[in-house]
Length: 482
Image (cartoon, rainbow, N blue to C red; front, side, top):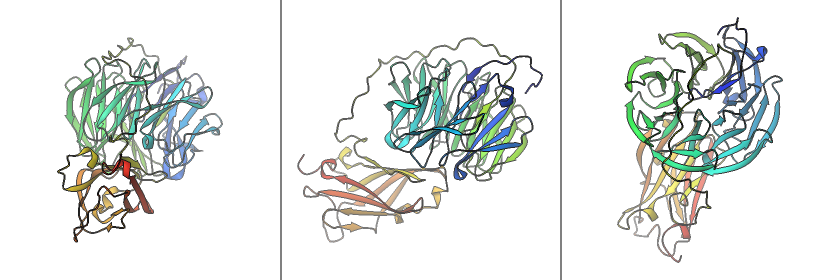
């Protein structure tokens, strides 16, 4: 970073997964790195030049996502374990507003003009919009299942959101505040980035060990790039030439050449990395390692680690603030959306996957269970429950899933033995699969028939909670009176 610059100007741009960077005209806030430290309920503030810890700010309850206003004056902090969303004044370090969201919030994206903050609400399958002038939630947009990561297009006209349990990316029109397109990608799409020219969206597929490259003009995934195991974070250089992908499953990061869509380098970093971001100058990569309690500083040309900064566990969506030499660029091309805008409607209470889904609340492990039988053929021999687990605390691979589930019904039947777990995708922080129960007990009694008033699936000892209950009443079973 050039300390001898003669002028500064305001500029705001998302460069990658976990990056929100603001260039500002207040010298005291130049060159700062903000790192949320979830389990500590704090945000570390580091100097980008000395790479030293300057101070620690209160971050609310389990901060995970992190956004910054274009002028660098405010931090926007979701909470993974409470309904409170915090707004922090960076000059004083104080929380100036605590916004009630109704549930836990995940990641955040701030509009280029700073007027709106988009927040993923995984439990309700929505994206909330906060007005930054009033600090009120002004809209809630239904998207796909378990929305994870939002990113704006460079011109601010569109927001792209990954839906982990729908294997899709929703395209939100910011003018109408509605979803205008859903684009299929790989399994368990996690983080994403938009290219600086606005022509491509790069999506990390955690369950497919790949990156989908969405061509915005064609509105489809035009390429798939294989990377390392359990990819998580993603970032792009300011010139759009390189994409960096963290592979949490094999403790490495991949470098993609965007001209050829080929992985040119894979670099071992010893401990699992998660969020990653690139400085505005493009010469430095910042990469979190929550298990090792480190923030890696990497040379973007040589891929060598410059420094390993000690931080608290739980490093996640990194935000940067500072000033750099002025850059010029052509206005980005606007995405050509082919589908007509669809107005948001109240979901009908019918037997679709959304209506059959049940989710927990207030748990470090987010659980989404869908009773599948009303959507399957009548010849299906088992009762089938689709399950997804998502967390950023602990290792989900420690759970022996088949030993954790209990089936119950209104007739008093209880099944704990003989449960089958069919894995679909597994990693430390994200798992999905299916519980299967035979439709009859050993004595021939049916687990579900037209007299069944309700069924229950219980999960034991996940995320430190002894028992969690998921219930479906008769109208959701596809049997009995309608």
